Image (cartoon, rainbow, N blue to C red):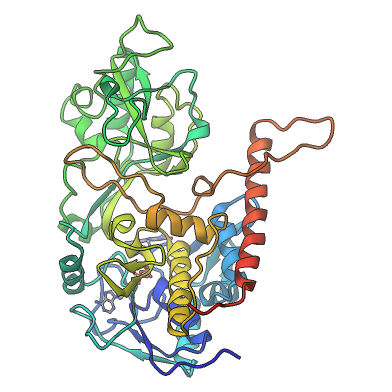
Length: 472
Ligand SMILES: Cc1cc2nc3c(=O)[nH]c(=O)nc-3n(C[C@H](O)[C@H](O)[C@H](O)COP(=O)(O)OP(=O)(O)OC[C@H]3O[C@@H](n4cnc5c(N)ncnc54)[C@H](O)[C@@H]3O)c2cc1C
């Protein structure tokens, strides 16, 4: 039996993250007041007053705990007694290898479990200001569509210039899928810049014919439609979609993100490239690179097809594809500490998509961690975050410090929400071995690596969950 605590933790937002956080806290004997503004006030995407409403797809994506990072996250959440996963499992609908749910049954199950828990009080009200001073422990889990009044209040604490904007996302590529026989490392004019080496970017060269074919493909590519409410939010500074830039003139990209200046191709030094695509390191591990200036609203299938025409990216594997939508999220690597507390006001902890993770499952997983951290704090216990080798730990590290911020003067903030993927996990200590007499190659080798990372994650998560609590 967990000891009980008298003072509640206030959780604001009863979405995927807030519901999971409330559950984890109450399960640890700490009372919770869960504040949800619906139905009193709604968002542009929610349709019901149910907790943990799924605003779009009904899928929690792959449920494969061996070959898929989100499947590993599912498995870890089940190990940790997640309410979101239990409700999803109970309301599953057939979807091949994916975990898809009956959205109404799922939301009802979460709502009922939280309403029936003796330590949880649900208040249907909007928090329109910063939490009152007497709330000494708060989790803010108000999501990508945080009400404007609260978003303004949070903004006043962070010193940032924006919190909600048209989120322009450029694709991110797994480093080991880039053909370095065609691409090369070099910074423009070999400038080391602050903290750089002079060879920080990966460069992919295009000749004139390749460039024009690429521009044509961008202009002809099918774009994702904009939702009504998206049209009301302005673009984030200078983040025009690449296909919009291409439509402005055939040479626009060559004088913008694809300018070929200050770079020499060591594979072919005599020939000057007509245009160059640059990729910048995206995580400290150096396993992921983002395509600089390539924010796009092309449909995902089109992106993979068009971007694989770039020399060096023919076999690119994308950790995430580009997109544009309204989003509210913190510049977390700068603003949050390693246990999701706002450095400027540590009684406030953040969870869910507002921290810069992306997706239903990731939001719930961050809620799970925030809930456990808050409960441990309430019990006077030391907070030990999950190891980096777990999906939870990898996600937490991405949010609170794993991302590498762009260094150019005036660059827009480059931290972008991301789904969990194997590129966020630290490399294996030892490469997976084939059976005696055989060698692992290609897809077989990739799968063996994923399986080994997944097995390591689940073992380390189990050990973390079993670690006895220690006084802070
Ligand atoms: C339009 C759209 C479509 C998306 N589609 C998908 C998808 O298909 N698949 C996927 O995996 N992810 C999707 N996402 C991304 C994201 O995973 C979900 O938005 C997810 O629900 C985020 O979980 P959350 O708990 O952080 O926020 P939410 O689930 O949005 O929960 C936040 C809750 O806080 C409440 N709230 C907001 N402000 C206040 C306030 N001031 N006071 C009290 N309560 C407040 C809201 O009513 C809401 O219930 C989508 C996002 C958007 C915006």
